[in-house]
Image 1 (spheres, helix red, strand yellow):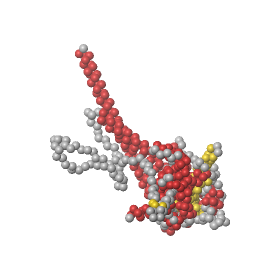
Image 2 (tube, one colour; image 1 turned 60 degrees about the vertical axis):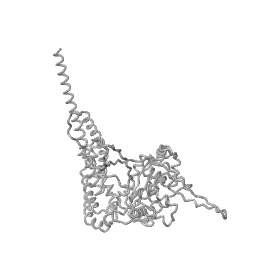
Image 3 (tube, one colour; image 1 turned 90 degrees about the horizontal axis):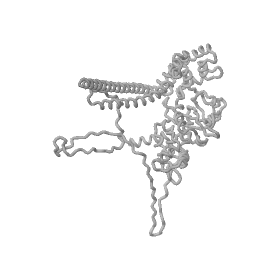
Image 4 (tube, one colour; image 1 turned 45 degrees about the horizontal axis):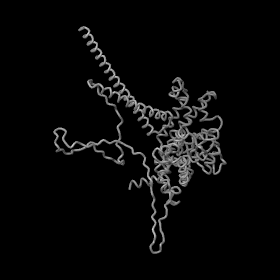
Length: 547
């Protein structure tokens, strides 16, 4: 029996030792996994920071960099979450075994910025003991305090504003007097300007359809039907139409415009059809112009040539756009009041070569990384050299930009033109690179002059990115509101996008601007309406803060 007991004791001891080794291995594995996750997150965070710094310094000049930032942000989101999970798992494993010594591990976390000073502070004091925890004496004196701040949010609050107009009667003549009723943003004044601005901005700025807004508001205890919210949108468009007209006039008085369009699904009988939202952007910032930036949006059921002709009727200047043939009537010599000048976008031209020289793109498509066109790669490098010069002169006045382009960009453009023609002569018309070259230098028709217009005018930009940035929110909205319910709905969307995008271009909160304008418009004269334009409104707000 003694032998059996000793054997059992030995097996138990061996089992305990193996269990301890397994626990130690589990702890080491958890620590290693947490450390690896943290390291990956750190690397990704640094890459993202570098990419953003480059974008802030030079601007996004290529699809490669724009796609890189988007990809880094998505990867960082997942890596940060994984690092947090692994770090917590490692801490839990270490706490489960109190007897073991675990090597120190501290996860590097982003340095949190202090909370804004303008936020109200609510003090929650943890009650301290009135007696000394050591000797029990009640002779204790406060010597200081430690404060830990936690950011919290208060759910949206609703209130009813009662506008009271008192009635008085005269004891002498018995005449009844009462102050006149104030003007309201909408008839009968049942909705305040903040509510109207919130509904409008959530629909067009945050891409939240009215049915979803109605459901969310209902969960907060307020019954506002979809038709009621739609009524607010209609009232907002009518009230803001004078401001929209002023913005449209401001855009169409520019000597240079960016133009572009994007698809919008339009609800039609039996399904949807592809409609269009057009934008025309005034942005003089690249050459130091003093005119504030603004964007004008238009809606159409299709992409026929008649629409840009109608939108820009009576306008003359430089139109920066892609090579879409629908703009061609604007460039005719007999056009009234005169022909517009075409300036084509080098980003579009570069993109066609870039797609043929994109190594990462080939890998994603399961193509060999080396299966790229050397001619396309060389074209991208030559075009990038021109973009590098543009980054240096961005923000300079028009004369300085023109001088730099004549001295440095023109020789590169001339060399590029000669080299492309030589390479094109060796290619079949079915070659993909030949098609990219033909976009720049078509065999029939003159397009190269429009691509090189920037060499003779310091105001012209190398790309049409200003218009593409204005349309960027439309692509996000398509995934949320799916389609425009009618042609009127598309025109209403174009109306609101004009206001919202113009505010964003001037670094203004569209919802705050819209609420203040709706509140002030009933009491403002027509001659003072320009004060409510986004850039003038911003100057007023800054003056108030400074005072």
